[in-house]
Image (cartoon, rainbow, N blue to C red; front, side, top):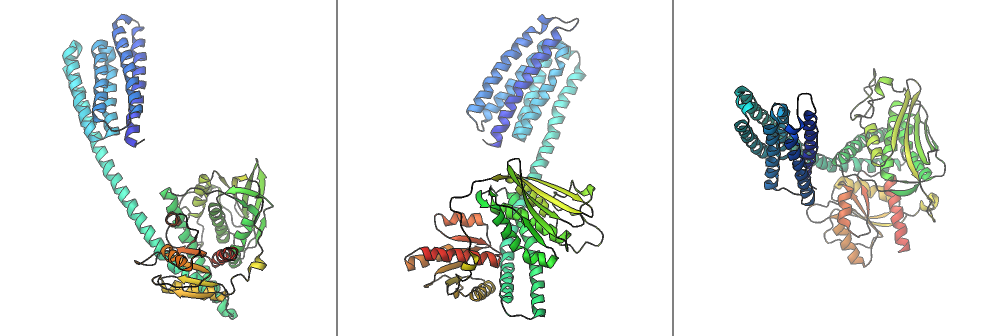
Length: 537
């Protein structure tokens, strides 16, 4: 149902309410001292018929929704006719019914726009003139009539001015949002590439035999890159949430293994911050969106590294109310009471003296809160100044373990990439060099190509960027190689675009997707899984 249809139905519902109130009001007048019920009985009967007709009109609107100008104008005439009859027959005591005229006028204008406001205003003035001609009391009060006419004109004119200003402001806001969306989409794609390539280059350097000083320089580069990546991901997360396109994709996962992976991924950042990460998870299976939960816990850990440096951090899991609670405790400086109600607001940061070197823009907890709302999780925070902060994620649903859970054997998998033939297609030269160097460090035999045109390969795995310029996409390149080889070669798409967009383009193709910037550990794990697909194929 469209917004316009909803507006018309709302107007019809309100018409029934107003008519019901009018019957009660006129009925009460008949029982007042010095008044006779017989005087108001015709008005009551007419409004009762008016009410029945309004109910029928409401059902018609509900049954046949849509924009019907004739029906809307009929509704106005219906309203003004009923009000005018009450004013003529009710005399002086019925004057409050004039408020109904004002409601009809403004109600139609506000709901349907300026054109209907003008029509309603014209009908209201006509109705007032008819009432004036039929009512001696009004004829004896010409200045009252003048006041009512002016009121019925000035108020709609002012409402029209406000409507036009609101419409223009709304159009400008929509245009600004569209422009912001275009900018963020393009900026996200352009920024992903250098962040992605720098991360791969530093991963290559880490696997080289570096001296202590050189290793320290690589650590500094990685640390700065991590800060940039976290800020970048926070902005993208906020952009995705604002677009309303993010929906939970639930999976059954082992919560302990999931959190252990996050701890391993953050081991380097924890070392830089002087934080000892401790995990107390237990053996629980939960139904959750792993990507959303990972983002939530990652943001909490990032805050611990910023504000709880040189102190231990505990990640714990407890059973509560037939569900699970994930808690992150730090022993940092804590948050003062006056800030606790605001820390989940966007861009709000707790600032203290000489802490301007702490990175971030105040989006982490806001994103945690909004992702929690999408998954039905309650996020709570407790903090004491000088003692630390605890954040809890309540409401994780317990699940039954799969019959045959996948068993990870990292020691056995460590050598799966050695000798693996990889066809790498990437049109960005720096990313191509970085990815090739890293894959070769892992023992892969890499065929590096900057274009998919005329590509021939006997590879075991295809790794391609989605956007390969104007000639082809990574998906088309993979299709070409698979057709050439005669079987579905395991393939991976790396992309700086929205993952949902790429998934829609894949249809039924069995192709893995990773979003840039890709963590080396994430890339390595995906390649291991694809290599196993190759073995079992």
